[in-house]
Figure 1 (cartoon, rainbow, N blue to C red):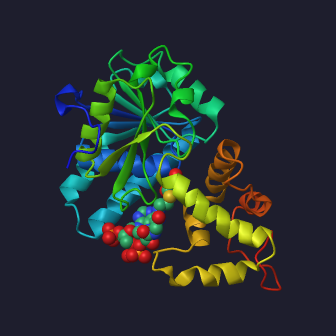
Figure 2: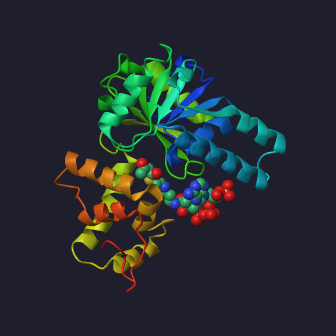
Amino acid sequence: KRPAGAPDKALARPVTKVGVIGAGLMASQFALLFVRRLKVPVIITDLDQARVDKGVEYIHNEIDTLLGKKRISPDEANRLKALVTGTTDKAEFADCDWVIEAVFEELEVKQQVFADVEKYISETAVLATNTSSLSVEQIGAKLDHPERLVGFHFFNPVAVMPLVEVVKAPSTDVATLSTAMVTAAGLYKNAVITTDTPGFVVNRILAKVLGEAMHAVDTGTPFEVVEESTKPFGLPMTPFQLLELVGLKVGAHVLDTHHAAFPDRFFESQNLHKLAELGHIFERDSKGKVKGI
Ligand code: CAA
């Protein structure tokens, strides 16, 4: 079923080579999806060779896991591995027609990353950001061609979660939007077109749930009580397990973005910031209390 407002797919440009900026967990997860589903070369870059190597290694390991589960043949595993390369030289992005980033959730960092990569890519290449709550319009503010930027928001774990939010900024043109919709279909994902508002749709709702759970802790309810109380809702994970899955720094950032945009409706959580510094939510001290709270 075509999502509301989806443009004619005849306008979509073919994606024959994918560039991925950032080699962290989220970027590596979706890089694997591009290789596996579109079967096109995927090139990954990051700040240094060590990070690039780690990303490529993660993808190779995941391909081995698929092989171990007999989801792919040995031949296919080799073909997929050969399609993944890493580089620190963005000149190698010249023939990519789809470039997607998942670097740190900082507006200036994302703006800079795109302004930089635009120097190397073709005029028709589409740029996509996996931002989880920042404004796509603002991310594209330093581009010469902001009309080719679209939000393309995956959920963790990328291989399993069926949804992609395709975020249409006011400047996004129809060919870009159409390419994003066709690409999402090629990745076997359900795409919805969302407006460029903080948190789009999913994180706006998640931020409320995760934020309220943290606020209960911030205002004196013991962590264990909140954790226990949220188990019987029939959701696959409690709010704290979900925070751990998406990463505490990302979670804190998403909450802060919502608090800045809607201060009357979203809280800032000092405890979440403390936990993000520690890097772990379920780590206990010698008395069995969650560290950092
Ligand atoms: N990375 C990759 N794959 C994973 C994974 C992970 N962290 N965790 C589980 N999987 C895979 C498993 O390998 C398994 O795949 P196969 O079927 O191919 O073997 C599949 O998921 C199911 O895993 P399990 O049977 O082990 O576990 P489960 O049934 O308990 O499901 C879960 C695990 C899918 C993570 C489930 O708990 C779930 O759906 N949790 C909610 C996840 C969620 O809401 N994500 C959205 C987070 S918000 C976000 O990402 C956006 C943002 O911007 C912050």
